[in-house]
Length: 279
Length: 223
Image 1 (cartoon, rainbow over the protein chains, first blue to last red):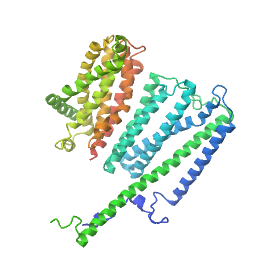
Image 2: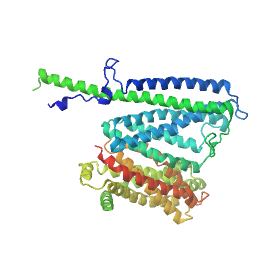
Image 3: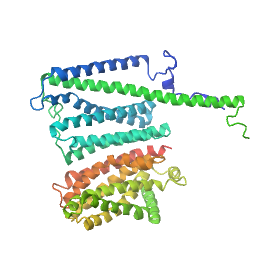
Image 4: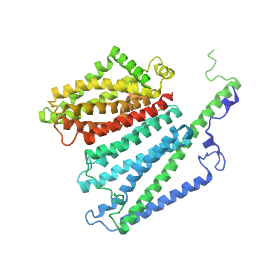
């Protein structure tokens, strides 16, 4: 057997710092990145606490929607993360994986992490929207344009995750998943317009409306802004953590393969036959 | 590219002419969908006339899944998939050829289904041209998206269950736009056929043909 074949299969990106400071615990990124991720996590937790405090106690209730309006600090920020941020990151990462010059396992891991976190946020968008719809529209589910296209988007994201779980060669899997993410990203505007023309009764965007003049004021506007910041931070932190899990899972799979190969080689050297002397 | 398109489309259509799988199995299933929807919606003429356009497009959608599965199943045996790659055909040509063959089969099916909705559902075609244009544009989009996802699922052990899951949400706009265009043309809807519905169908078809031409080579590379 050649030396090349005996080299460990472990991914150098993950394995490079194995045993550096945490024993045999490999790190997918540098020490500095670890601290940055921790910082994002602390900032996310602090901003969520601040949003909850401002949203529930400081801001006044609305004249028409009363306390229901407090959902505005949660629902639009979650939807922004789900529909734009998570999908955008996944689409860009998939495109960069497919582009031969920038192809690396990093983009594949980033895409799957973003889709998985984005799926959670998309589901939360539907749940919070439905909770809001019941008292304001009188029904849990209206065949409203944005609601319907978000539901279709959730099914597409679940399809991506289902494809991801199909056992297959890692390279072929990354290729298939990247194509699905890109095709879905292309489809999102088409779905949006088709369903929009099909039917709409959703209120128009309040903050990012055409002339960028927010139609709400004072503490409510600041709380909403903070809501956007906190959900973006939560997304960034979850994305980093999910990326780490993906990298560690890959590392574990490859090191187990290494161990199994080493075991077989040891058997070859000592001459023991695991299947007994059937010959 | 165009020569390869004609070659691959001719090959797929010749296989279909000799095996008649789509004609003898997929078309009857689509007609069955018409019958089942009539059971679900009730026998009142007003209901079936109103539902005709939508049921037509849902039936076409289900038939697309079956036709695409068949289109890639013919290459499943005897290493035909590898042979197709080794011939050195342009991947874009292979994509367009397979999509064209699927589209031709779907158009034949749509003729049968149109007779079905007129005969069974009592629909009346008020404007012939919009019906034809909407059907052609919608079919091109379905065939393009279907072929792209069909190629994606090649070699997966779970492709029969995964393909509908991945394909159906993506082609939902075709059902929305096709149904609305047909409702206008069949006299059960209001508004304009062309704007935005036929425009949407044409844009969908153009986008997926372009995406397929660009990405099909990537998918053929995968083992």
